[in-house]
Each structure stands twice: as structure tokens, then as C-alpha cells.
Amino acid sequence: MKFISKPSEGLQGEIKIPGDKSISHRALICASISEGTSKISNLQESEDVINTLNSLKQLGVNIFKENESYFVEGKGFRGLKKPENQLYFGNSGTGVRLMSGLLSIQNFSSSLTGDESLSKRPMKRIIEPLVEMGANISGSKEDTLPLHIVPSKKIIGINYEMPIASAQVKSAILFASLGAKGETKITEKSISRDHTERMFEYFGASITYSATETKLKDTEKFISQDIEVPGDFSSSAFFMVAALISKNSNITLKEVGMNPSRIALINKLKEMGGNIQVFNHSLFGKEPIADINVKSSILHACEVVPEDVPNLIDELPVLFVACSFAEGTSNFYEIEELKHKESDRLKAMQEGLDKMKINNFFEDSIFCIEGKGKDYKSPNFLAETYYDHRIAMSFAIAGLNSSSSIEISAPESINTSFPEFIDLGKTLGCNFELS
Ligand code: S3P
Image (cartoon, rainbow, N blue to C red; front, side, top):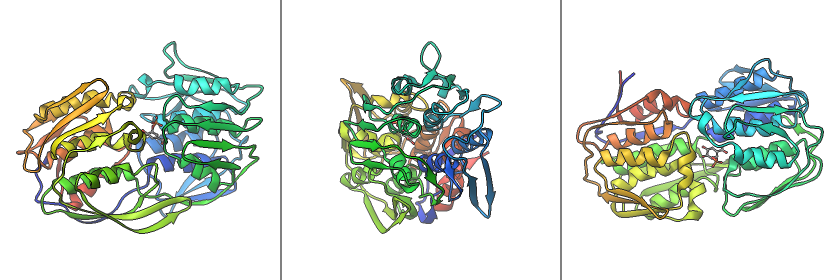
């Protein structure tokens, strides 16, 4: 498969963005351990989410699709059954880390694996707190996949101070806490996304949470719920940047998740001069949503400080693209977590920016990008994506402002989170060619 992105005449139109990845994982898992049947609409049908869905099926949960919605027949906290094979989570850190928490409280053993990229990612960050809770979970010598879990006699709630801002780690602890004796309290220095807290509350858990502290008390059961998954803010980010940096653009993205712990990119792009309007505010369950209108804009450089980082961690690659077509030098502080994502995203983006002839350097924990302004056209090149969906989509957006084209390596990776990306992009006027 060959994917080429070429200069566009401008983006126009209105689209509905498919469901959020983080919320889709949580909706499936919470529904599977609730009592009764839950209906999930607008579930993200990406490879990551489908791997979690298939793992839940292997654990004995009946999940089926009818009229565009998914129905999940919940088994309660203790009703899952031992899987016959290893559970495979593909590329998904969220899938494997959240499910590790849940599997740690089951009375059967399980093993969890993933693809080449996931097999290199750090799991010590979940193993340590889960072991502290009494779980029997171990990884490879390097604390990577496969993870092996054997039943534990006693899981206890913990008081955990998070060493890094990570919603995946926080959520692994919260899922394990559903089977723990006593209260769990998690404190964070920086704020990570709170979708698990909101979903637990929706399913009836005894949970309280603020920006930096989450407390979960003994919760006996979850009651099944109907869930409408908001559009994925991180998917929207690619088209937001595309419209800002392309001439003659005016697009509207409908029903996008506006969880405050996810939307720092909007404020950053507005500070840069982006013409962005957010309207039609509403709620899907406990999650805020809204429509977003974005028009072509002249952008200026930005500063991303450490407190911003967890809130726009997944949007950094495409923000680097926006900064390349902005006036002035942008600075990003303490973005090292990027090295531990689906690829080493700092390295992958630096390589691509070098090919775009955009000066960039990483020194003393500060990443700098010298933008070349709105009229700059990137030279043609082949972007090496390291099979990372967000790297692929970021350089596809850069291609819209190239002198003739940017080719994207391994475009199949886009199916990890946004299989509709190319078709929806074309609907808006992106000059994408797939052959
Ligand atoms: C996610 C949390 C983030 C994010 C990932 C999804 C989640 O990871 O990068 O794409 O759904 O909880 P970390 O929690 O590891 O930072």
C-alpha cells in the first residue's frame, strides 16, 4: 500500500469524528464487568479497540453489534472466565495496561502479549503499583511483555503517589482496586486524563476525584449503562491543524469530546493565532462534547510547559507540524514521555522535520522548532513512520503544505486509531492518494 499526501486547494465541510479511543476501551471493559446489558454507540472501530473487544470475548463476555451499536452482556467483577490462549493487545498500551489491572483481581491465570512495538514498551510502571497491592504480575527480565498474572490471595487498596503523569497507570490501579480490600488513593503531580474516573462514576462506583487526587472506596458492583462515545479529540487534532495551515479552509468537526484533561491543544493553537470556535456544548454521559469550527490562520510560535504535556501528549506530533508552518521558534519543555509511545515519537518527528528542512533540536530537556511561516512549502520526501499511527497522520497533514508531495511509510498503522482518516480527509478536501 502506498499513501501520498499532496498540496490541497483548501479544506471545507462538516464531519462527525468517530468515537474516542480512550473512552471506547473503558466503555467496553466497564460494560463487561457490570451487571446487565450495556449498549455502546459510536464505539471506535480501530484495531486497538477491537483487540480489547476480542480479549473480553475470550474472557467469556458476549459482545455483539446490532444497528451500528455494540451490546455487551456484563459478567460482574468476578464472572470472567479463564482464557484458553494468551490475550493479544496489538499496538495498544491502553488495552494491555487497563486489562492488567482487571486481570490481577481474577481467580484465574492469564498472559498478555502485543505487537513488536507494544512488546518494547515499559510495563514496570504498572507492575510496581499492582505488586504493591498484592497482585502476582510479572513481565520479562526487562519488565516488558509478555505479562503473566496468577491469582492472588489478597489484593489491598493503596495510597499511591504517581511518579509520572499517566492515565494508563492510574487506570490499571483503579481496575485492580475494584477487587481490593480497603480504599485506594492516587495522587498526581500533573493532571492526566480522567476518563476512567468519569466512567466508573457513570457505572455507579464510590469514587471521588479532583484534578490531582482520586479515591475509590469499596465498590460492590457496576450497573450496566447505555454509552454514547464522544468523537475522538486526538483524531480531530489532525484536521484542526490541517485546516489552520491550509489556505481557503473552513471546517466543522461535530460532537467532539471536550474533556478538560484532553483539550490543551485548542488553547495552544488559539494562543498561536488559530481561528477556532467551540460551540454547541453538551454532555455524553459524564463526558463533555462540542462542535469545533476551524479556519485557515496565520500561526505564531508557542511555548509548551511541563504542566501542559500530559494534556496534549498525543497531539504533540501534529502540533510540531503546526509549529513548522508558524512564525518564530516554538519551545517544548519536558516532553521525554514521547520516547515511550507507540514509537520513539521524538526521534521519529525529528527525522521527519529534518527532511522537511525545518530546524529543530533537543537540548537540556527542551525541544525547539524554528517555524518557517505559512507560505513555506516542505520539500518532497518519504516519511519514516516506524509503524506509528500518529506519526503517519502528522506527516500526511504536513504533505498538504508540501511543494508536491510527502509519502507516508507503513500507512496501515493508521488503522490503530483512525481507520476513517484517509476517507474523511478526502471528504474535507485533503489531497490524499492511496494506491
Ligand atoms: C491513554 C493515556 C495516555 C495516552 C494514550 C491513551 C489512555 O498514555 O498517550 O494514547 O487511554 O489512558 P499514558 O497514560 O501512558 O500517558
